[in-house]
Each structure stands twice: as C-alpha cells, then as structure tokens.
Length: 163
Image 1 (cartoon, helix red, strand yellow):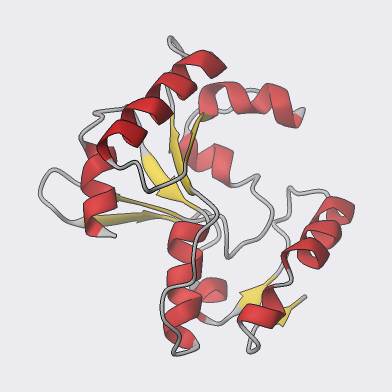
Image 2 (cartoon, helix red, strand yellow):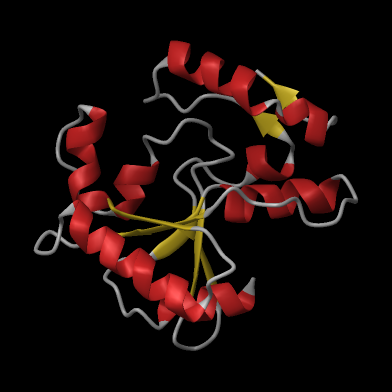
C-alpha cells in the first residue's frame, strides 16, 4: 500500500488522495483476520479546477498504468464530479467525499512529503473501525440500498453491521 501511495504522491496533484475501498477494505480485512481482499480498482481523487476534463483524468490513469500496469486505476478530479452527481460545486476533496455513499467509505489517505500517513474522514473513523456500514447524510437512500445489495459485503466480511 505504501508503494501505491508513493506512486500517487509522485503525480504532484493538488489535494490528492486515495480513497474508498483502498482504505476501507484493508481495515475490514484486518478486523476479520483475512488476507488482503482484491480491489476492483484504486480510486485516486484530486481537486484541480483548471484541468478538469475527463480526458485529463484518463491521461493520469494512463500515466499510472505505465508505472504499475498490474493495477486498475480510477482517477477522478473532484472539481467536476458535482456535475455528475447533481450537486452544487465542491470546494475541495473533503467536501466531495462527504457525498460518497457510506460513512465507512467516505475515507481517504495520502502519503505526505515527510512520509507520514494523512487521513481524511468527514464522518470520522468510528464506523470504519466499528464495522458499521451506514449511509452518509447526503447520499440518496435508495441508491445506498441498491449499492449494499450489489456489493454483497456480508459474504466477504460477515461481522459487518449494515444499517
């Protein structure tokens, strides 16, 4: 995970983080005494109002794939995601991830230039470490329920408490 964080840090993107399953799944795996669950992708987020096209994100994904071709990357500039989500303009990544589906997913991490881990969690870390899955206050409950059904997390992590 540290190598992945170093690779993303080397992009030198503004307000740049790795979020969602990269953090969440690791914690759930440790709490369930499991080996690392395979990730669908690694979600890289950043905030840049100047270079905010999908093409810019694809260029960054391709750059990451050249360095680590065995990883599926998903890069999303949060400066444009409000349009896709039907929200008012976000001011930074912190605000953007506050709109993510679950409190235990609304979490991101980055490696600082001092090689320290820095976490961003608008709803705190208690739900993540407590194995509680609940919707964020800003997320559509119908979409949340469909997502929970689709993810089938209880089959992977049977100690989760899904609310």
